[in-house]
Length: 145
Image (cartoon, rainbow, N blue to C red; front, side):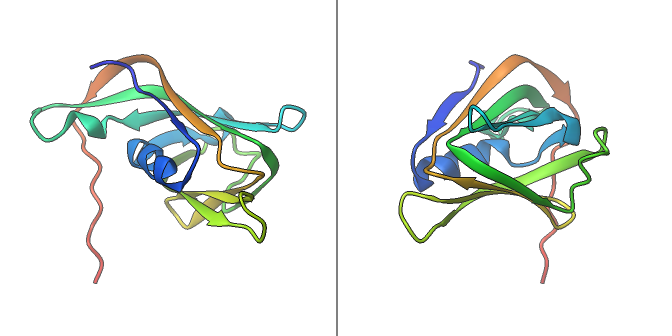
Protein backbone atom coordinates (compact mmCIF):
# COMPACT_ATOMS: atom_id res chain seq x y z
CA UNK A 1 0.00 0.00 0.00
CA UNK A 2 1.14 3.53 -0.72
CA UNK A 3 1.56 5.97 2.13
CA UNK A 4 -1.47 8.05 2.93
CA UNK A 5 -1.19 11.80 2.36
CA UNK A 6 -4.35 13.92 2.48
CA UNK A 7 -5.41 17.53 2.99
CA UNK A 8 -8.76 18.90 4.17
CA UNK A 9 -10.04 22.40 3.42
CA UNK A 10 -13.74 21.82 4.12
CA UNK A 11 -16.05 19.63 6.19
CA UNK A 12 -16.34 16.95 3.50
CA UNK A 13 -12.56 16.59 3.29
CA UNK A 14 -12.34 16.55 7.10
CA UNK A 15 -14.80 13.63 7.20
CA UNK A 16 -12.44 11.62 4.97
CA UNK A 17 -9.47 12.32 7.27
CA UNK A 18 -11.66 11.46 10.26
CA UNK A 19 -12.48 8.08 8.72
CA UNK A 20 -8.78 7.39 8.11
CA UNK A 21 -7.95 8.23 11.73
CA UNK A 22 -10.82 6.36 13.37
CA UNK A 23 -9.39 4.16 16.13
CA UNK A 24 -5.93 5.71 15.93
CA UNK A 25 -4.09 5.45 19.25
CA UNK A 26 -1.69 8.01 20.66
CA UNK A 27 -0.13 9.16 23.90
CA UNK A 28 -0.85 12.57 25.40
CA UNK A 29 2.84 13.35 24.89
CA UNK A 30 2.41 12.80 21.13
CA UNK A 31 0.44 16.05 20.85
CA UNK A 32 1.83 19.57 20.58
CA UNK A 33 0.46 23.09 20.11
CA UNK A 34 2.77 25.64 18.52
CA UNK A 35 1.13 28.98 19.34
CA UNK A 36 3.55 31.09 17.32
CA UNK A 37 2.92 28.98 14.20
CA UNK A 38 -0.79 28.50 15.08
CA UNK A 39 -0.52 24.75 14.50
CA UNK A 40 -1.42 21.61 16.43
CA UNK A 41 0.21 18.25 15.74
CA UNK A 42 -0.65 14.74 16.78
CA UNK A 43 1.40 11.63 16.01
CA UNK A 44 -0.63 8.43 16.16
CA UNK A 45 -0.67 4.77 15.24
CA UNK A 46 -3.60 4.65 12.87
CA UNK A 47 -5.54 1.55 11.88
CA UNK A 48 -5.40 1.09 8.09
CA UNK A 49 -9.12 1.00 7.30
CA UNK A 50 -8.62 1.70 3.59
CA UNK A 51 -7.20 -1.80 2.99
CA UNK A 52 -10.77 -3.07 3.01
CA UNK A 53 -12.16 -6.40 4.12
CA UNK A 54 -10.22 -8.53 1.66
CA UNK A 55 -7.16 -9.02 3.86
CA UNK A 56 -6.95 -11.63 6.61
CA UNK A 57 -4.45 -9.60 8.61
CA UNK A 58 -4.69 -6.01 9.70
CA UNK A 59 -2.21 -3.16 9.72
CA UNK A 60 -1.32 -0.01 11.64
CA UNK A 61 0.88 2.85 10.44
CA UNK A 62 2.52 5.79 12.18
CA UNK A 63 0.94 9.02 10.95
CA UNK A 64 1.08 12.70 11.75
CA UNK A 65 -1.95 14.98 11.80
CA UNK A 66 -1.33 18.71 11.42
CA UNK A 67 -4.08 21.24 12.02
CA UNK A 68 -3.24 24.81 11.02
CA UNK A 69 -4.85 28.19 11.72
CA UNK A 70 -5.34 27.21 15.38
CA UNK A 71 -6.05 30.07 17.78
CA UNK A 72 -6.59 28.08 20.99
CA UNK A 73 -6.58 24.52 22.32
CA UNK A 74 -8.79 23.22 25.12
CA UNK A 75 -9.26 19.70 26.41
CA UNK A 76 -11.66 17.78 28.61
CA UNK A 77 -10.77 14.45 30.17
CA UNK A 78 -7.11 14.69 29.11
CA UNK A 79 -4.47 15.05 31.83
CA UNK A 80 -1.67 16.94 30.07
CA UNK A 81 0.79 15.95 32.80
CA UNK A 82 0.26 12.23 32.12
CA UNK A 83 2.25 12.15 28.87
CA UNK A 84 2.19 8.33 28.67
CA UNK A 85 -1.61 8.02 28.86
CA UNK A 86 -2.89 6.28 25.71
CA UNK A 87 -5.97 7.68 23.96
CA UNK A 88 -8.12 6.28 21.18
CA UNK A 89 -9.32 8.76 18.57
CA UNK A 90 -12.91 8.14 17.52
CA UNK A 91 -13.57 11.06 15.16
CA UNK A 92 -12.75 14.58 14.06
CA UNK A 93 -15.68 16.92 13.64
CA UNK A 94 -16.13 20.56 12.71
CA UNK A 95 -18.47 22.85 14.62
CA UNK A 96 -19.12 26.05 12.66
CA UNK A 97 -18.54 29.36 14.42
CA UNK A 98 -20.63 32.49 14.19
CA UNK A 99 -18.47 33.87 11.39
CA UNK A 100 -17.52 31.49 8.57
CA UNK A 101 -15.09 29.92 7.95
CA UNK A 102 -14.07 29.98 11.64
CA UNK A 103 -15.17 27.31 14.09
CA UNK A 104 -13.98 24.44 16.25
CA UNK A 105 -12.33 21.21 15.20
CA UNK A 106 -13.10 18.67 17.89
CA UNK A 107 -11.08 15.49 18.37
CA UNK A 108 -13.49 13.04 19.97
CA UNK A 109 -11.67 10.49 22.12
CA UNK A 110 -12.81 7.30 23.82
CA UNK A 111 -13.71 7.69 27.48
CA UNK A 112 -15.75 10.86 26.90
CA UNK A 113 -12.62 13.00 26.41
CA UNK A 114 -12.14 15.73 23.80
CA UNK A 115 -9.55 18.09 22.43
CA UNK A 116 -11.12 21.26 21.00
CA UNK A 117 -9.23 23.50 18.61
CA UNK A 118 -10.52 27.00 17.86
CA UNK A 119 -9.63 27.53 14.20
CA UNK A 120 -9.85 30.40 11.73
CA UNK A 121 -10.71 27.87 9.01
CA UNK A 122 -10.31 24.19 8.17
CA UNK A 123 -6.73 23.47 7.11
CA UNK A 124 -5.80 19.92 8.08
CA UNK A 125 -3.19 17.50 6.77
CA UNK A 126 -2.44 13.87 7.48
CA UNK A 127 0.53 11.84 6.26
CA UNK A 128 1.94 8.43 7.05
CA UNK A 129 5.48 8.83 8.33
CA UNK A 130 6.62 5.24 8.50
CA UNK A 131 6.02 1.73 7.30
CA UNK A 132 3.16 -0.38 8.51
CA UNK A 133 3.14 -3.30 10.90
CA UNK A 134 0.77 -6.20 11.25
CA UNK A 135 -1.77 -6.38 14.03
CA UNK A 136 -4.18 -9.21 14.73
CA UNK A 137 -6.70 -6.94 16.37
CA UNK A 138 -9.33 -5.03 14.41
CA UNK A 139 -11.05 -2.30 16.43
CA UNK A 140 -14.65 -3.12 17.26
CA UNK A 141 -17.42 -0.86 18.37
CA UNK A 142 -20.35 -2.50 20.14
CA UNK A 143 -23.74 -1.35 18.96
CA UNK A 144 -25.58 0.40 21.78
CA UNK A 145 -29.28 0.25 22.01
